[in-house]
Image 1: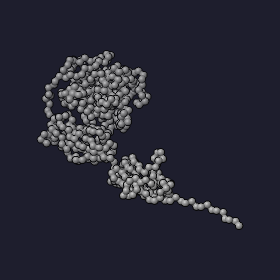
Image 2: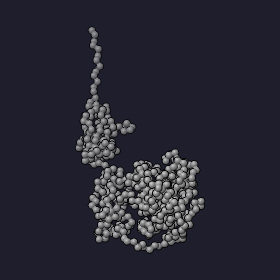
Image 3: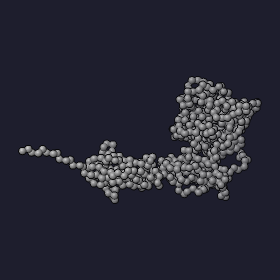
Image 4: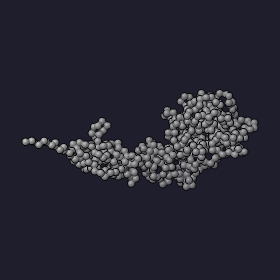
Length: 569
């Protein structure tokens, strides 16, 4: 993470008694919704329950984090959490580097539009950024938001950390053996592969860019339909980032601290944290832990200027002598009863969910394996919750069922690819899904009155039709209306009734008609030329629904002759 997190050691060491007491005090006084007995120190080193069955375990791989707590005397409250950040100077800890702060606020604005029900506050991103990287090492970023040097967590080799073998061929972390958390928000590569976002509009998704990382973190925290204004959902979201009660308490403390006021400071001048969750108990003197493959770290003093951390260069580790996990035994993925054809109309939910089974080489099912479903191709379809990726754990029969898939407005084919998380060598299993245009199979007029007009006049009633599909309202269905010559001759008539375009010119074909939310279309006013007779209006929708409406044009009334005066004798 920040400063020298590129070579952090083991997580799981107990926090100090002083830190524990501070967490308890802050949790009671500052963190909303966190219940803490003031007579007891907060629990330390504890892991919370997984946020949700089948969910991605966490963004960081449970990498170490900074445990520094905010001052007990919070800065003066800001007018509101959305009315802007006070620029007056306050406590040094309240300052957030300008570019980093801008990235957090921009991400909040994007999520407010994309997922308004999430209610993501930028202060939550700031709290996580503080805990994960000390606000990108005190704001050591350029104007584009790129970190000036890599921010890397320790390699997740199973020795004191989670075991996550390389998933990106070292593309993000430079490590082709094991994954490492990367960037100011400390995403592991396997999570960034699906959670990454382009936050600064440069066409790239880079975990080392604070704009990209902040937006990705926002979307990550807003999945599963969580509402972060609800404490239970807020807790779940934070725990999904790093599954530790201590981590939750620390983030909540910084969240409340930033909510009470903060200000912008120049990039590169932020104060770096000094305490980490992978350090031993700091209540008694002890030698600093030795870095793997390096020398003993020397803590930076708060008053010293930020120093860039060197990228981690781990020595080649020996394979840990750990028993095989269920994931290690997976040889391939097989379909588990998914329909051969996955199809839905635009805007509808696919009737069939995708089911995939993890199997050994001998064909035995493997439970407790995470399967990731990723949407690939030019599509705006999403899984439930609005995401393009979903991770689900296999059940006891080895089957993972993807969340319901909802078609977007784009039509055409796309791919849903199932892969085994942590086993890049296992070939993915692809499913083809098709989104078809919205369709109707029946059309009917909503009124029964005859449609009549005198020659040279206009029809008193407009034509309104109702579209349905399999008996249900068919909304968003495209249609065309044409004045045709005969029932068996659908060429456009060159005489009789007509519509008018914006310029008042006569037109006898209307395209780009679409049924409304109630499945209805009301056509514009119809006019008649001087031709008398019966004419036909033909309306056709996508899906083949057709309705022919009769229009009658009668002769104009003949004016009565003016009476003449009688001759007088």
